[in-house]
Length: 78
Image 1 (tube, rainbow, N blue to C red):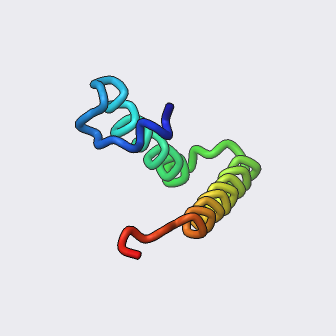
Image 2 (image 1 turned 90 degrees about the vertical axis):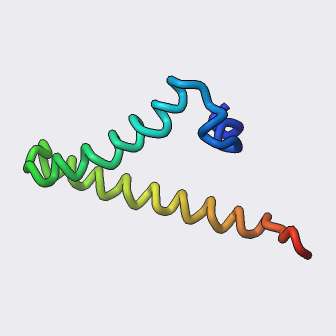
Image 3 (image 1 turned 90 degrees about the horizontal axis):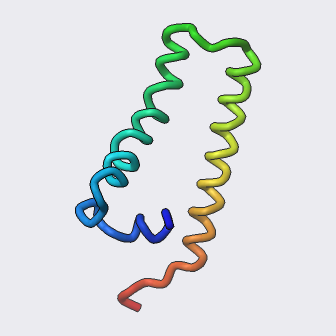
């Protein structure tokens, strides 16, 4: 469902779906962790380690997806 939803412009998405995936979810992900770090509200060093490991894992996943996509890419002009 989400894969198909990303193929269309945001103007074609219904109201709540558009609001959640355009504004709410990105803001939750981008704002909460840095604020916790700046406010010194992280529970323990283990939580910080888990955040770093999650960041590394997500970076590796995105790198893998990017390289896989490049292998499948075919130019429209050739």
